[in-house]
Length: 194
Figure 1 (cartoon, rainbow, N blue to C red):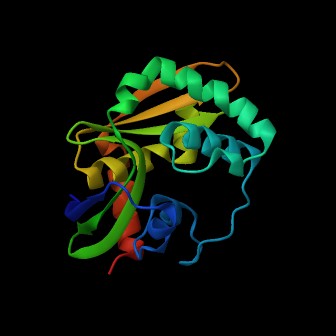
Figure 2 (cartoon, rainbow, N blue to C red):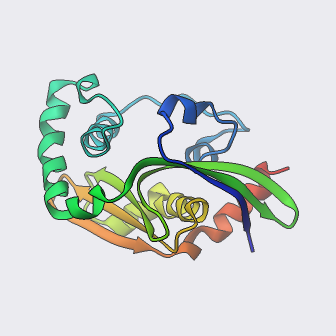
């Protein structure tokens, strides 16, 4: 069983400061090659997701994106607000949570940045996707692993994925069981912990 200690929530931490923290993130654990994070180009899909995030969380300046991306992101953001605005407005947006994950005496400091955190209740992670098979996409992208880290560091019982499909114009809003990624994180602690 993984033990999570030293849990801290930083509600207003700028992204740049988060990136400088000497903790391992889900992205780092997922993509690193021999302990080095490879450079990743920002794809159009990633830019669209970041732009919708900017509309919903207020974290980034939407005008950092090109006009076509803004034009697509604005109605998606309005749709999400219409359906989930009451919940999202009551959350802490872009909360940073840190802590130490320990398994059999091996420790690893980890961090996460949560789109929407309702303390003591849940995390909500926003995704924008061109897929129609959400469960397959969740498995492929490792979103269950990300939600496991988020819920564990935020010390909440449940994490939700809020996925908007650009193909169907529909929403997938489902909880992810906390236990989904327990073995995945154990392997990461054994590989990268101290």
